Structure formats: C-alpha cells, structure tokens
Image 1: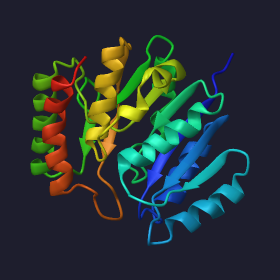
Image 2: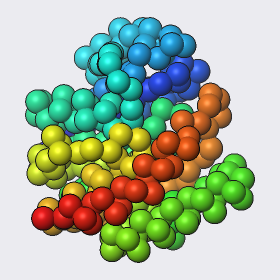
Image 3: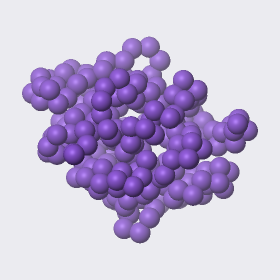
Length: 235
C-alpha cells in the first residue's frame, strides 16, 4: 500500500519562493502539503491561500498568530499532522535550499527507518553557493553537536526530514523547548533517545535564491546552549 505523505513547510517572508516550492511538491502524485505561515508581513500568507485554492484538496494553510519561531511553526504542523491519518510527515524549507525532487528518496528510505534526514555530509551530499564562512560554521556546528550529544548523525542540523508517524507520536512535543534551528537538534535527540532508527540520504543543499536568511545571533546562541541542556536533562 502506498503511504500517505504530508510535507510541512513553515514560511516567513517567502512570497517569491513559495510558488516554486509548491509546484515542486505538487509534482509528486498523492503528496499533500501544509504551509504554516508565521504571519508574514510581506504577504506570503495571501500567496499561500491563492495556491491552496489552486491545489484544493492537496494543500492547506495554517496562519499562525502570537510568538513567531521555526520550532513553534513545526510543532503546530506536527500536531495537525498527527490529528490526521498520514503515514509519513516531511519537513522542508521554503527558500528553495531543499529540492522537492529529493522527496522520493527520503520517503523510500522510511521503509527501514523511523526518521530520514536529507544530509549534506554523507557521500553524495553537497552544498552549492555557500561562502567558505558558512561552510565552516555549518561543519563546526555539526561536529560540536555530535561531540556534546554523542549522536551518530552526520548532519544534525539539516531541516530536510521525513518522519514515520510512530516516531512523531513517540516524541513528547509538549516538552520541546527549542524555537529556532536548535529545534532540529532537540527533536533528533528525542528520536534517538526513544530508540528511533535514523538514516541519512544525500542531498544537494542550495543557498536561498531570494529573501533574507533567518540566521541570527540569538539563533546561534540557542543552538550552542541546546546540546548541553539536552544531556543535562536526559532521563
């Protein structure tokens, strides 16, 4: 039986990129899409609504209000997914750094894995259009996370993921404290702690084409602190 798949895409000021992302996801028959817009001031929410009307029955939009954040957006998306009967739930960025054509590879690998990560740092993975400073920062961040947490994953900070339903159901979502990119580290750590089988498949990560990066000093600080908090609070 073909698994039912939901792709969750959080958005904040991504109106230029969103139509291309949606077109790429919709190219995969049967895959559904949930856009979680964080009250974007550039009109991304309105663009999402127009796309939902065009792809009625396959695309839905959540318009978040209140405190913004990548982690908060994903938590709302996860809860929505778990309230429905999807077998697989994927995470993907809206800035075109994650190629929708890679979705089938992630989905296929869930046949023997609970969480599949689209990885830049396994054989076959690559990064395009990043300056050396960003490459160094990303490499260092993953080495740092692995050494602190003892995780055996090469790309702990990749946001391109596919979860089996049972893995998401096992996560204590109400205990997730991270908000920014460290949300990716925390949920991975929880999945491994639960005993989930984690696999990595190679992807080519492409620097965003339009819009501004969401990386900030606050996000970096949270990411530095989170691994230590996780091991300190491990049951």
